[in-house]
Length: 231
Image 1: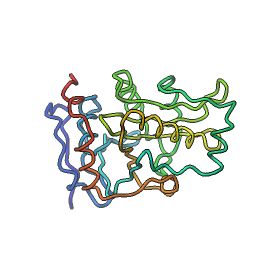
Image 2: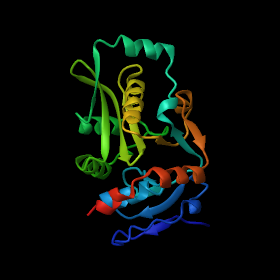
Image 3: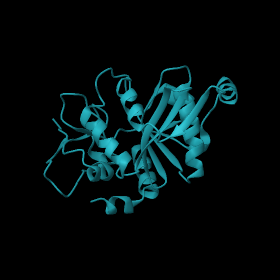
């Protein structure tokens, strides 16, 4: 039986095995262990790998095949969403105004159909630290003073690694995604990593591509200097 690679938390090389060695079942499980230090997380993302685990589990690292991506200029906006965006006089959008509120709300939202505490306290601390380092970013959708939707992810070079989104009102997360796509195009970002395939994302214009192709995109678009500058 093939087992995932074990990462020693004390290993300072931040080594990850080749994503081709990820398990087929569960799809994409590559490694287990390690830590959630900023450097290890960034090393992982720059190789197309991300952490995802539930409370009580060890840290699990994934690189699924296929991989879900979205080109920011290919987002499909329905007529109803266009109307909502045009008449949202009571809704406004901010960037990095309430990262903590967004990640806490995402922690209460099922991820990939899994209802569990997947965004552990340790994960929230790790991504908040990356936010303080201006690597993790959030989009917030407000209705007056109420946070009704949003998303967060990592901006590394010319790629944005989407982590999670939430919605407390109809279409609030779609509004956040629409704003993100426009915002990223202005920043020169070419690709959004959506991680795992879903019908919801397919309807919004995302597509599933082979992992090998995704890794080539990551190698092309990630900025290695971000990793090198981490201490």
